[in-house]
Image 1 (cartoon, rainbow, N blue to C red):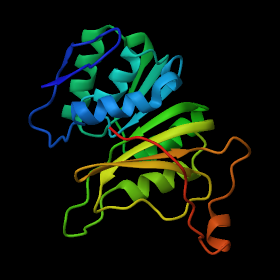
Image 2 (image 1 turned 135 degrees about the vertical axis):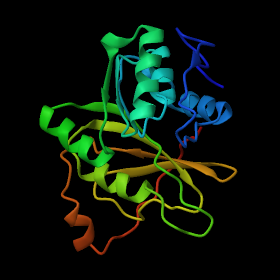
Image 3 (image 1 turned 90 degrees about the vertical axis):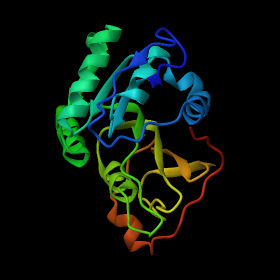
Length: 215
């Protein structure tokens, strides 16, 4: 069972498509994540990539986010997101794109959409070391035009699937581990973004940050 933990819709259950291979963020991890984000949520514009049932984005709306754009390519998962949006009555604060996440970022950039908080929860890598989607989506976010200055990116991934060691714009703030699950927190630059190629030309020096939390 997936439910809203806190806020306006506290304890409301969410619909989940059983036929889709989803990996919902556990309540313990989700609560930790939202405690870390804290005051940033109120009035924020949120982007929920790999939305699944809409679990994280709807939790954000419940806790005071102004709006959320959900991105999910599975038709069954999209149907669940629509049901959950309607059940909570947040149609006026929600948008849903049935697209691959990388394509959605391009579309949103061309539309002029900008987001203060991004949740990214791509398919996990396995213990065999087979890569999951965390590297590709972070590279896409690093190069996209959809983040406001100082925007926060919370990326959930397996401990077996490390994010890129160096990014041109996103700065690692913190990383929290919960068993095999890790949440890495990144901040967008407050000034003018750099071209991703600048990182390559500088030798790809790794950046390390301070503190952040994970759900």
